[in-house]
Image 1 (cartoon, rainbow, N blue to C red):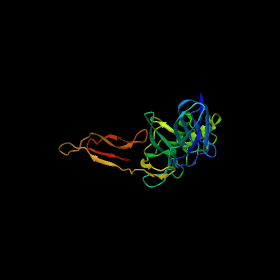
Image 2: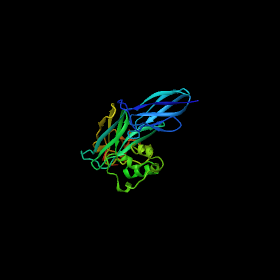
Image 3: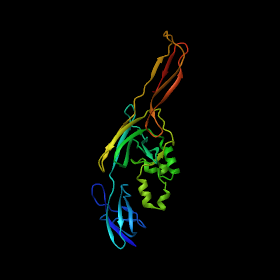
Image 4: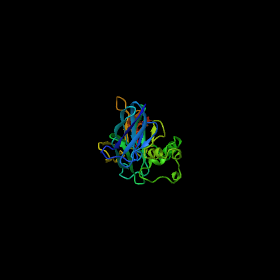
Length: 285
């Protein structure tokens, strides 16, 4: 036999959510203006009901035990979400226009990152993130390369431009999902795109930097500006035991950026010092 489940969907602050999608029955249902839903023809037994708000990407679920011929009450609370906003500036303090900013992530136990593209003044925003601590890094790969990869993967590249300044060549882009499932397409369009590690490479010749921030409160917007680390030069001499300059292979290692945006210690340069004087010089370190 079958039964029914009815109840309400609320957000983390206790407000009822209109237009939330409730799944777990034979078909999707949507909450009304009072956050109310009803799922008919649920088979008897234990089931998980999941709800999501297409506008804010908040999700929640609950377990219910359906009794044939009866209506069971259920309440679903959507998880808390918050946002990060900031500006990217180079080592001289100037805004970096249209730079990609990324947050290293793990999906299916594989490293990758979500990203957004800053506007002309270097302003960026990550929207509707789960509460927790985040590391932000810039620059990521060039925006045009990320746009191409997103389109190839069937992801709307415009979703990365959370502060506007969408390139004219993307004005006429249509997501394949828009004609199949407009609600799902709208939800995905609010998600920052995700790429696995090993995609386009970032160019770090002009500098790079990180910022760390913790999201603790639902609907909060935390500021996390990224300032590129200063760069300089390193010089010296290679000598023998008698302090006489000799030619030798010199390698310099230091802080760099991994393919997913995390900090990494790597070789920054390698050269032979002068055979007569032993002098070496590394620039832009």
